[in-house]
Length: 593
Image 1: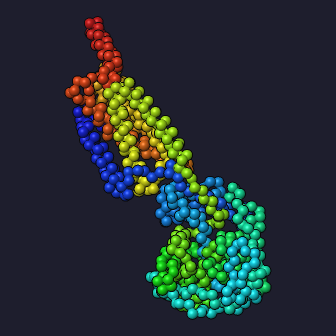
Image 2: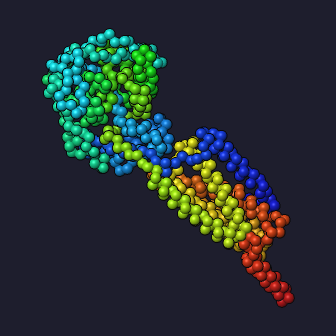
C-alpha cells in the first residue's frame, strides 16, 4: 500500500469491489435455477434422517476400518445419484445419513449391502410364494410341491426368448431362466420360517446374541460344505433340509443377508419368482464390476441392468461362460438370486445383463449401488425419521433476533463513538453481508453447501470479527492524530500499522476455523466453514471498501466530511495539538538555553 493517501487511488479499489459484487450477483441471478436463496440444511427446511446399524455374524463389534469404508462407499452412492446437501456421518458404530428436503426416499436404499457375486447353479426347486402371515401355504399352480430336489444337472433351457447382445459387447447376454424346472421342491408343508431377524440391533453397532445365533444357524444349514459332494452333485438329504428351512415369501428378511461366505455353497431364494437354488461357491465377486447402468430391453420388454467387468473379471467370466454353455449362472445379490440365466454362448468381452422383474426405479437403484461398490458390512433395516423444520425455524428466528439486536448495538456504538466513521462501518458491514450472501448461494449450487443453524451462528460471530477490524483501524488513526498529525496524514500511516494487526488477527481466526473444520464433524463443521469464509471476506471488505472510503474522506474538500469532530476524532485532535504545542515550546526553551 502506498505511503500517502494521494497515491492510494481509492476509486480503483472501490471499482474492483463493485466489479466483484456485480459478477457474483450476475452468477446468482443468471445461472442455475435463478433463485437467489442459499440451500438450507435439514434443521431449517426439514428432511429425512436414516440411521443404519451394522451387523456382524458373530455379534461382535464392527471394526473402525470397515465402518469408515462403508461411510465412504455410501458417500459415493450419494454423489452418484445426485442427492444434494446430504451428510453421511459415523455416530459411534452407526452410519447416519441426513437428507434435507423431500429427497429422503432416495436415501433409504443407500445402506443396502449390495454384495453381488456370481455362482453356478447346481439345482433348483420350485416352491409356493407365501405371504408372511400365511401359516398353510397354498400349492403353486401347475408346479409340483413335493419331493426332494434332484441331484442332477441344472434343467435344460426352455423356449425362453434369446437375449439381445449386451451393449458394446461382442457376446450375447444369457437368456433368463423360465419356470421350467424338472426338479421338484422340498416339501413346503414342512417348511418352518426362520427366526425373525427384525429385532433392533443395540446402539453399539453389533447384533444381539439371539440374532447372531440365527445367523449362525442359517449358515450351518444353508452353507454346509457337504451340500455338494466331491463329485459336484447335490446331497439330496441336506439340500432338502436347507430348502425346507428357507421361506421365500415377499419381504421376508434373510438372516444371512450380507453375511454369507462366498467360499461355501449357498441355498438361496430367487427374487420375484418361485425358485429356491442350490449354488456352488462364488467364482466371480461383484468387486470385479467396472461399471453398471440400467436400461430398457425392447426385446424382452423389461428393465435390465447392464454390467461391464474389469480386466481380471472379464477373463474369469469369459472362461466360465466358455466352459459352461447350456448351464445356469446365478447373479446373487445379498443372498438373493436376482437372475439365473442359461449361458447360450461364451461372453468374451465381459458385457453382461442382469435380468429380472425390475421396475425402472429398482433397476436404477441396483445399477447405482453396484457401480459405487458393495458395503463391507451388512446393516439392519434402515430407520428413516422425518425431521420437521418447525423447531429449526423457531431457533433460526430466535438467533436472527439475537443477531439483529447485537448488530443494532454495534451500529449505535459506532455512531456514538466514531460518528461519520461509524457510518462507514455500517456501510462496510452491509456490503460484507451482501458479499457473504452471494457466496453462500453460489456455494449451494456449485458444491451443494447447505446453510444450517450452526453455519448461521458462525456468520453472526463473524460480524464481530469484521467490526473488530474497523475498530483496530480507527484506533490506529487516533494514535496518529494523538501524536499531532492531521487526519489526512494520519490515514496512510495508521493504515500501515493497522493492517498488520488486522492480518494477524484474521489469520488466527481463520486457522482456528480451519483446524476446527478438519477435526470436527456435522454441525460444528458448518460453523467452522462459515466462520472461516467470513473471515476471508472480511479482509476483502477492509482492503477494498473501508480503507479506500476513509482515504476519500480524508482528502475530501468538503469541510463537513473532513472535520475531525464529525469523525469522532475531535478530542484526540485537541490532545495532539496540545502535545504538538508543548513539544514546540520545549524545543524553543532548549534553543534559548
